[in-house]
Length: 423
Image (tube, rainbow, N blue to C red; front, side, top):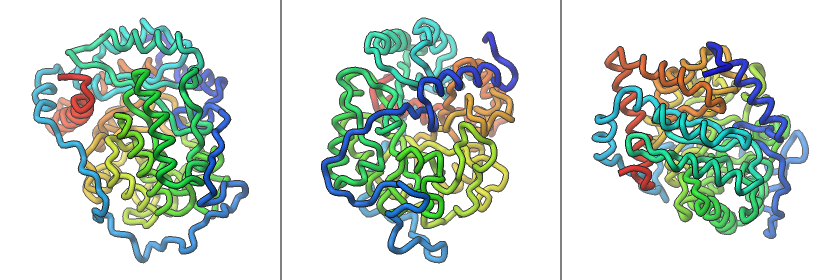
């Protein structure tokens, strides 16, 4: 692709600047919006100072972690459809690799270019970036994307739709949702109702997947100094139980609308100061351990049955020192798969232009993610699709790499089978 270098750096940085100019200020999205004012009385106070006022009365202690195997209220996950194995076995190695890549699209992108890219590389689909405010423009992109079905497999259409500042699609007929901080002032039932309504509006447009809820627990010692979450009102608070309860409500709302829900950013970015999209320092969590009580929010979210979990690109010195979460088998395999028993789709945070991963060759960001246990590599830069397919294909020279790529592709196809995106 034109404009590529071996890190994807020049193209990605230009694209990132374009997105920022459109109002991007948080992972994958962050377009500034006016949130709907919740009508219910607060259950926790908003973040207005460096020390949040909704600090839990009893701060979790690592000495007494909540059991990660608790099953109360657990929603049965979607089982692996036997057809997924057959479909993947009928695909070429390159097609399997393509199904493990989701590319970002901005309003200025050519719908024909994106559709041709999906068709040629058998890509998993797209996710929206920036502000989509004109319905004809959005419809043209969706029509083009939906016109292709490589290997008989339709593309996934995903978007960030947390609410508040984080809402990509803002066309007439789509409600402006409250931020997650504001949702936590409502009852969980009311929050679920609000999310269901908004999700149905997106489903009616042809959106299949939402990158939400944010299950990260904000460190009360950081408060709004936590730039990726608290600063932008993206979190449900500082109490793991509260965060888990509201994350579960959002997931239930998505399910009612037939939307693929994505709990994020495992194992949490509420304890880092800086945003991994824009900084390579200040993104190390020095507190969270493998069986940390702050992970209770994710256990509760996962028990609510999200079909996808997004992995953070922050570092965790007490889990896997020096390795970003989305390149860590300890995070994705040992913790998420084994400790939590999660069997659904594992999605990366942005691998295309996030500063935290720019030191890694563009294509190999995808292969490092999948090799460590991930399934769907997300890139804000579509120009990296080719190098990523190449790097993922190269994994198959080893038996273990071939097995891992096949497994990742099966997880993607399984989601598509469940949502009638393939047969």
